[in-house]
Length: 546
Image (tube, rainbow, N blue to C red; front, side, top):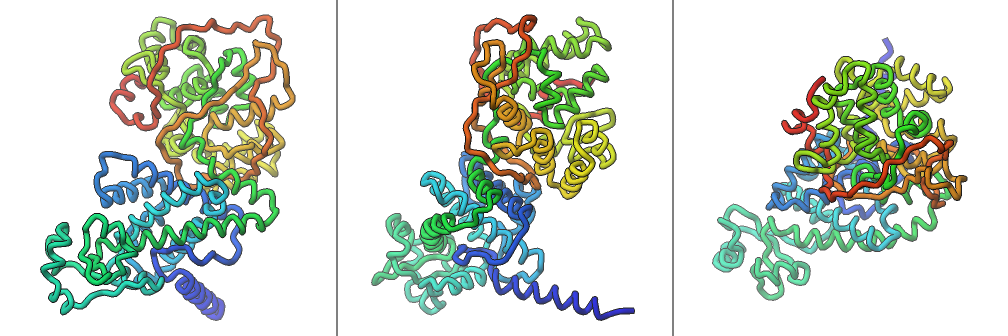
């Protein structure tokens, strides 16, 4: 038996751990030393997207009025991170300091550092974007600082040479009464440590009279040291953003990397914004559009509906909201589903069992809520049962079925293999982007995180040379609408955004028989993300099984 290779491997792992420990000695970083080394483009994308998801979550949680305390916001963030598959960030949120030497924790620190610097490059160019980035990073830093234990705090202070000294019990006793009077929020000064800091470094605490000051020295309880550290962190980050500008100007001219970095601030259009088509899409075009501009998840649903003349509840929701988003009117949607189901049920049964739910998602029934199309995060996390066709084919199809589907759609064996490998590794958005590239012979201009975003990108490319189209053609103007939501993990993208602005349009077909419904009265309805309500009893009832 050869023990040499095993011993060598063990030695290599130990050396790697030692290196990580030296590079990232603390759970909480101020990112004053840029990372060195090489990473793959896939990891580069994944780390940046993970970080952006975290900051979007931080932003959303900070706006919630029901979370009154920092601890409540931190717990909510942890739960959301775990739900989204970002467990290593959830662990970092509660990192105590320098105690852990486990490789998984050291790797989490590494990812934390690299991802921060990638986003720093992406957000440094624009003043408003830089401000947003600094604010979210500062809020995240604040949450993480409160998790440090006494040793972790002191190690952090020592590592960054902050002029802050822990006072002894004897010193505390000498000014006990003053400390007690000045720190009324502390139940007992005996249970908390105090630190001596120059009052100039904690002006906000002095201004609000939260600390005792004597001879220019502020006596800060450990719970309020965050004031000193957050000020230090912001100062470091502000300077770092200026440095990032210079680095970016001297960065690699690799078009993939630079294009991706430029697109990052606008990423998650499927999370932060829902794409809508502002014009009508005639039903007669759906069959053609399903072949040319649908993502695979929607094309599969369209084909299943055409073959089986029925879709189960979740499939109806996923596809119904998608066609609503690309511009199918309510009247046309009712006609579309009625005709699709006509070989299995008559018109009266359709009206009783299905028409109400269709009107409901268009905001014409019930609470008159204007539901938005489902994004990739919800679709990927869907549960799929027997006889159901919704969900994400890159996640939910077995490799054999996915290969058959790709080949049937004209994807070569070589490219199909690459797509399947990406899906196997959990890179569902990369797989979808690769599929897009193969069908359109070029990359989308924007990252794909939403089926309706895929559709919009497809229409841009397929109609880029179409000018002066007549009124019967569909011009897929897209508007953005702010919502709250977070995509799930492993949603990376491999693309180079293009700078050319093009109008969105759909190729004309012979229009003599095309009927465009007359414009009806418009009723203002409140727009809300249906993903928030999918588990509600009301939604389950209105979408009923069948």
